[in-house]
Length: 486
Image (cartoon, rainbow, N blue to C red; front, side, top):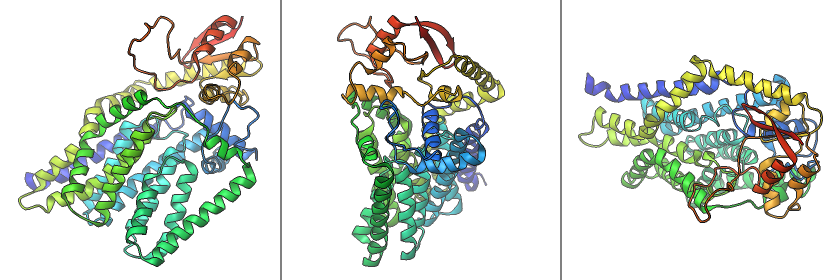
């Protein structure tokens, strides 16, 4: 009985773990607290979209939108119903993660895996995203929304059983994903390459024709509505730091090394065509893209989401392949399940500990209260403010003015004068400044000393110099340090 149940027991246990990890972002969905830096930035864009304003020619060159437009309208429409753009974006993010998990299970079934194997793939997707990307799941950000469209399209593609009629819908779902976020390239590329290489003429015509037609239509609509601003913003240069890329890639590969090894060996040793080959290509391409993009300013763990999803989709088919080997039984499959989840299991105490402290300990409520205190304090100060926490400025009723990341990149690459940020501080144009980060290069750092570069640089060092000269620290809160003019 133990031999027979070992695999099912391990899959069931890890599925329960995945649901537990997913429960955390579900329970915090209504919090007033800013979960991620991007939440306020996206909410400003969503509000502009619903107000009929341009998303790519804002009133200030220091608040630049370099995302495709679709997510802002989708979230904005739901935001009108809920009365809160941030809540709407969080709800769509949760729905997208559920879609990704379901799509992973459907892909496993399409590959010939059993139901229990499909549960493994679905729960692996849910667990990895909820455990490794807690600050993206259930957050007002378009990344997972885009991934949800793409995964649904891929599941439809591999599960169509030769029916070419599904391909226009696949192309539509891919187009929707890419119009939400432009860095989700792996699945559309793998599918397109496979169709061009192995598809029939009718399949190529339906998929490529629909895809090219949708691309042309999207470009025409974007050009008519936004003009050249969209392309200018999308292609705007940003800093690229190879050292930062190495650090981010090493961090993520450390968490994912076990599932990557299992899925990689399955793809190489299984010698299977069809869906298994596509999943192997998906994993390889997603890793190449992630490692290549990882050094870019503003890039975070989200660039490795495709690698997580590829590992999850292939987990069920890999278990089915092991089970079919002579002499392999439930215990071998159970061992494979544990290997695929090894990184998540090692990370689990951190993830569940955060869940317990925030929910059972009440810390989330306490931090929410402190955030609202910062909002009330800033709201009482008249005039525009500079906020590193853009949700803070939004909740305090401050206008969309300066996004630290966009402004810094614009200064570094010469798109605005070098003294733009320092000049407005010297002139006391900001009634208040809220800031969390510190200098990228502290003044007392030894020259030539090796140091870990910061994950994000939202303000240049010379702005901190001018802030010290022209402003005085007035308050510290949960969102950081608050400065008022001297």
